[in-house]
Image (cartoon, rainbow, N blue to C red; front, side, top):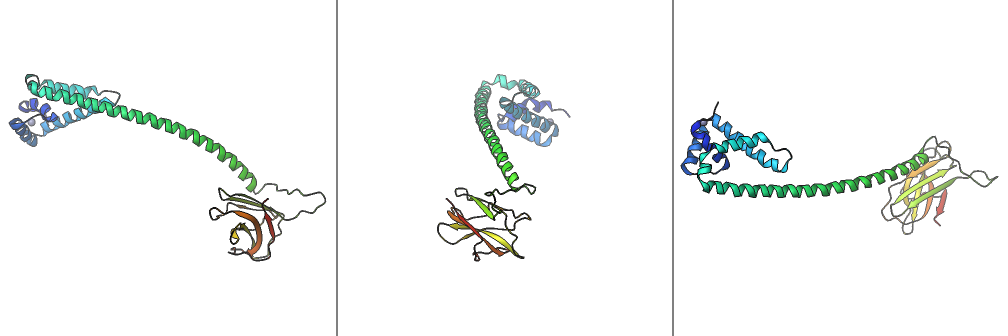
Length: 254
Ligand SMILES: [Zn+2]
């Protein structure tokens, strides 16, 4: 399929949108009935789009540029009629300037994002470091094969003992117990936070292992809980909402 010579010269101007009147109507009618010329027009549109892209990109597509320039050079009126030339040139320069501006804005945005990414990467590395330290502490505390030894004064038999570590700001509570006797069947121990105001707050049900050791890590607690003391009671395995007397162990913060 080849382009018909009678329209070939008009195709470039048609693609640029600068064909008018009878010439436009004639070209349009021919294009509607001619697949070969439509294909050539599509190629011209493609060349124009590629030329636009190449301002922002790195490698100018030489083939597209050559094809469009060749097509324009076959168009005699472009040289003969200065009116059309003067319309095309300023528009082209304005378009190039606009695209250069967009490219510059994109480049600035990009370098800003690069800086943000570098900052986040540093932040993330520091957090990973902290996380690894925290994980090492927790792994040692929670290891099932950890040797748990409670040191007591010489010649004193080991006593049941519990330690609560509570960080109010984070609502974070770690409770570690040792030398606990096994609770009765179908019963468990329950940890309670005694707040400065209000009723005791349930903070986790637990059973000690065969060595009498137990741990409660970060039980869900109401926000802004100010702890005055901690207590342990014996409760049904599912836990209770209010402590059942007597209190087995208790302790207040210093
Ligand atoms: Zn044709």
